[in-house]
Amino acid sequence: MTSRLLLLASCLLPFSTLHALEITQSGTGKTLEVTPVSFRGKNITFKQGGKTFSLPASSLTPESRQKIASWFIYERERNAEKYSAIQQAIGHELFNSRSSLWNEKAETVAKRLNWRPESYTGVLSFRSYPSPKYGFLNAHPYCCTLYADENNKVSHLSLVFANKGDYGSTVGFGQDHFQPQGDLPSPSNLNEAIARDAKSISTQLTAILGEPTEQRYGEKEDRRNALRWDFLDHAFILSERSHEYTHLLIVPSDIADNEGKQDFIKDQDLREMLSKNIARKENGDTYLDNIPMVNQGPKGYCTPATFERAMRYMQVPADMYLLATIATAQGGGTNPARLADEAKRIIRSKARRIKDLDLRSELDMKLVQKYIDKGVPILWNMRSLSKYNEIANSRTKERESVKDFDVWATAIQEEAEKALPLLRDNSNHHTCMIIGYNAKTNEIAVSDSWGPRFALRWIHLDIATAVSGGGGFVIDL
Image 1 (cartoon, one colour):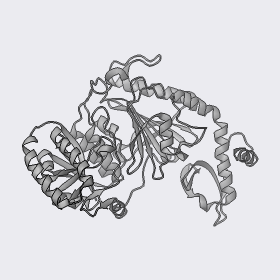
Image 2 (cartoon, rainbow, N blue to C red):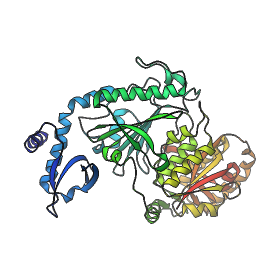
Image 3 (cartoon, rainbow, N blue to C red):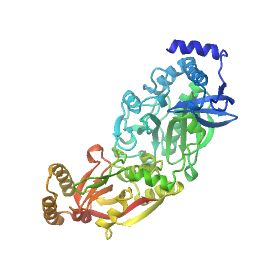
Image 4 (cartoon, rainbow, N blue to C red):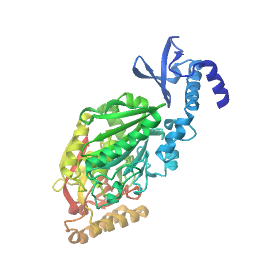
């Protein structure tokens, strides 16, 4: 099949360097001269007159669709040496058989990279916190994440390199990150580390793909200067923020053309989406069933991880590690207030509302029901004490086999009364999410950013009130 298409391509596209194609719309017969950018899902993205736009593939004649398919095959074969060079520079098998990342299953690419699954709910994601010896474009990333789209195909990759939270840190992997790489000198301060990683990545990409273009990337206050390299329908976006981080995105070219901006989702459309995530069981359990999981990692970034989960669930783009870096003092130590301010800024830029909650005096069943019944999770600051976790783990497992929830309600009420004196320690401060309730048994459902095993646990409301840290947030409609 490939050889036939290549032969067809050579007939249709006789020139050595491909720039544009003539395609025809089936309904109108209108002919367009375009440069293909990507063919993802059911849409084909083109450039015409310096602008990027998309059309449903079904709107083109069969001959035009065949011509475009041949164009992409020809281009990938023509760039075979670049595929090999990029793989070698990256140091890992990112691409497979010269195919586009955007047409591959996210799980397949993650397996090649050896990045572990993080979330099977909401949108798939895979994350790695590499050892100090791990390199990517001759620099050491501290956090690597691969996100999937709604069809479980690769959406984009995000890699955070030298950053404020890890420089000089004694948590996680510490300063091993900042050992020399190749001929590059060891940095003496944070900004040198950031500049060194950016230079290393830039040097590797430029050697293969040529000089980068400069562009702005991101939305509103999150817009930043970036360098961009293109390879077929892949764009490498490198951001270097002084005193903060070096960050590499790998995204579809059409997303880069649009500077990373995403379509706004109307409140009514979002309400309908969220309502579909509410699970209601015969025993009275009501909980949110489609919240993405984020692994907070070795540095214990529970607050930024929880914000990312809530933001992505509410269709607001977020990256836990970048949130954490901005709100972290050099060497570690996240400032929750600064993190909340940064998250609020991003959330409001997407025309969403974020509310502060007083969960020391207001943590009751009525408040929980108010938001869960709208499909909205609650971000909860609390104290994750050993006794609390012991009860949450054991009771969550036991309730799976409960048949009489009236008897269960009495049992856990008595247990809560006995446990309250053991929940007074003012330590283990933590941020998690309240994602459900059972008004009959007086329980709430809690989700922690510790992996799938902690995606849903049940705890009596009185115990939750006893360990509440007082603060909380909701991203409301």
